[in-house]
Image (cartoon, rainbow over all chains, first blue to last red; front, side, top):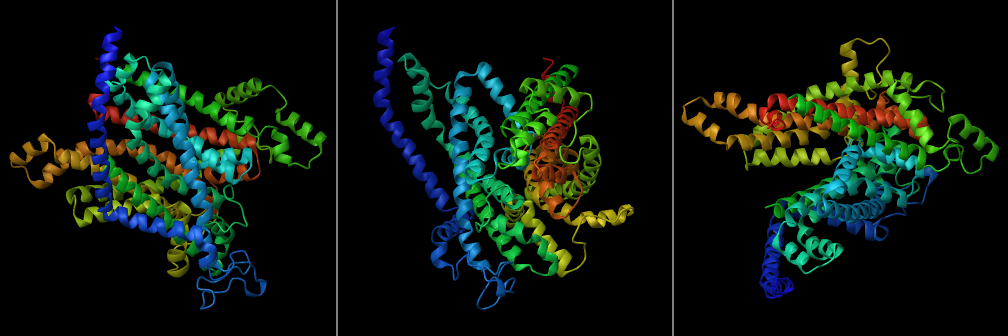
Amino acid sequence: MSTSAEKLAVADQPAQAPVQSEEQKAQRERLRLLARTPTFIAGALILGLWVFSGLFGDVVAPHSPFQDDLLDKLAAPSAEHWFGTDRLGRDVLSRVLVGARDILIVAPLATLVGTVLGTAIGLTAGYFRGAVEEVVMRVIDAILAIPLVIVGLTALVALGPSRVTVIGVIGIVFAPIIARTVRAAVLAERELEYVAAATLRNERAPYIMFAEILPNVLAPVLVEFTVRLGYAIFAVATLSFLGFGIQPPAPDWGVQINEHYALISGGFWWPVLFPALAIASLVIGVNLVSDGVTRVYER
Amino acid sequence: MRRFLLRRLALALVTLFLLSIIVFLLAQVLPGDVARRILGPFADQRAVTALNKELGADRPLVVRYGTWVGGFVQGDLGESASTRQPVWEVIKPALFNSAKLAALAFVLVVPLGILGGVIAALREGRLTDRLISIGGLSATATPEFVWAVVVILVLALWLKILPVTAAFPAGSGPLVQIRYLLLPAICLVFVLFGYIARMARAGTIEALGADYTRTAILKGLSQRKVLTHHVLRNSLLPTIAVIATQAGYLIGGLVVLEVIFNYQGIGQVVFRAAEQKDFPLLQSAVLLVGLVYLLATLAADILYSILNPRIRLQGES
């Protein structure tokens, strides 16, 4: 009994080296393919610009995004204020540039929380199967029955909106959805020989799940992360617009639209249209990136 | 068929039960002290205690959950904490209004989405396909309120062809109502088009490559006949399922659009309840939204199984 387990363990060692390099080769091939996908490049460029703007917006912005000027409020776009000024006389261009920051912190962190939690749940459900799996799947169905915006709204009313609660709520809602994808991948992996080998070596379940199976399901996890990131940006922007996400006076785009959309019919389109275009471009950029990643990683 | 239906129904009931627990957790457990959350941190403790007693929030959680769900099952959705109106009286007209808006959006987007998807599939890999696919993806990914801003500016303020609000004057005829509802409906069309077109495209591409299509072509049938009799019949099946699941996304979008266009629908009710921290109204409205979604997916599954005997017969063997 022990000899066969040892044999398997020994046989496992040398076999690992070529498999690893094959995997690395495939990885390099995927990156090369990605770099050649026009939609991915376009998306990465847009995303890169907004990340730059979020990081260095303060330096690039022509004015302070917080400095109000009540004598010059709601001024139309001009040479001094390219995108005009808002209802407190703040420079809209500067607020749009700095406005990338909050959403680019909150949305990726929320996605990360959801991905880490979801991967752990999915690994457990897929590895142990049985009752754990059944319960997880039903809870996922139940959560998916309420639109993300409404779950977020309800939870944020109960908890009070702040950056941390927004990250937590979106992350927790994402977790079961990501868990479902991870579970599907784990179901295929757990039947493979390397898992049987690890079981015969008497490895403990957490070791097999996280050290053996996890590295092999990272591709679907990565795809899911980029897809969810798009949804997270959508959700954070929408919640901020409704007043339950990022809070004023932060120069967030959703907050800016919330503060000014009632003024559109008065002809003051600039404090609304420019943040709207910023959100649209960011969301489209992220979706082009995730579209490229999905195509390359899912054959 | 009966076994399939029963199994599907049982699953829906289990999901509904879990859903009610999740909603209850969100609206009653998460706030901690419900009355304190409503009245704010500076309210007098006696007022907080009194309000908790009035809302029934001083009772044990299990009792509160039982009372709420028991009432819900019998059609008693409770009472709004801010207006003291029965919740159902607030929600009923709102649901009807939202259904009108949703119906208009679906009437517009379903044929458009299917047409777009089929055209993209017939031109697979070419420029038309890429334009429809990427355009649809981008339109879908853009939040509803961004679309709302764009269509208000272009169609209502610059071209002046449609009204800025969706709140039509009381007693308007159906055509006037449609005119007022067109702007929010167009936003929903943008957001839903991508999903439907993507499914229709994938289904059509699969059907185009299938053996029966090749046989039909080799039999010498006209291209139109192959398309309508053999390809579309098979390709539109999965699309139907997707359209029903869109009901959920649709309601999420309604919150934003009804707020922007000032339309008294279920989304507006949810939003106002959230704004006023009206937890009794909020929890019943949210559960109802989930119920509508579950019914829509159930209907889609049943429709799908009627159209596709393979699924229906699976349960019997």
